[in-house]
Length: 327
Image 1 (spheres, rainbow, N blue to C red):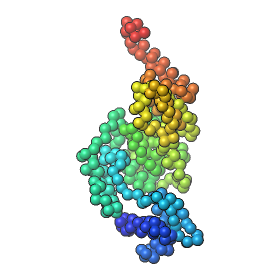
Image 2 (image 1 turned 90 degrees about the vertical axis):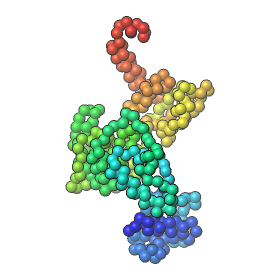
Image 3 (image 1 turned 135 degrees about the horizontal axis):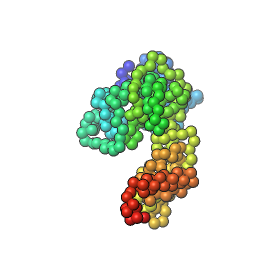
Image 4 (image 1 turned 120 degrees about the horizontal axis):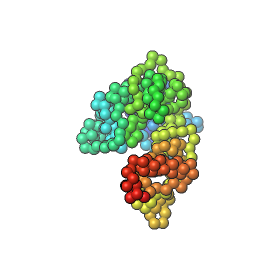
């Protein structure tokens, strides 16, 4: 079935709701000569995938919006579209380009340009990025959209171990220069984060993993805590930023549920939940004396211990005459 025709059904259903006609699956089926099951699937798609605030009115035997301001989504040039233009795999970029070229036909927006044109005008510069094997990237994306599981050999630098796993890809995230595959792990039987740069070999399985059907927690997994490091529980931390960097920090979003408080003199405090301190400690140390840890005591201790280790290392590597100058 043409994507254009399917979207046309969505627009028709949406228009009837906006007109207060309380459309239902039977109306949709009769208008477009569909089966009742297909019409109902369309309605469920509008509700579940397009986030429409649909509710059934038993008196009128049809659907209405609980929020009259809702509109069907269309396409616009966003940060995500721009980031897509930086995908290292030319074949995948070409596929995305063809996909986006089809969307103006659906929406009627002729001003939208292809990824290839975007990449000529706009660039994204990454530093300290992780290089990913082209075939591993391509196979991961293919499995993600095909809904198939993968055999992988994965190396963990934290434990310096290499393991064979069966995973079922669910979400691909680009985070600070690195690609991360959020997948159901057959070994741990839970959602896990796999850095694509650490996957050594990859292949498709003959039989998919059986995973739980309810994955509402996937969005929570990707946005719940500060950074990419995840954990089962989180604790709120508090940081104080010196005036020197407070204005810069105030322009950023460190977490969707952060609480920022401007202070006299131009400084700033920031509170947000964290599940794993490792990444946050690196960020704190990167700003040096311009950040003070207010909460938690555990985080404060870990930062102090890391500073002490750094100090000892510097002293050990510095000639004695220079040490006297430094101290």
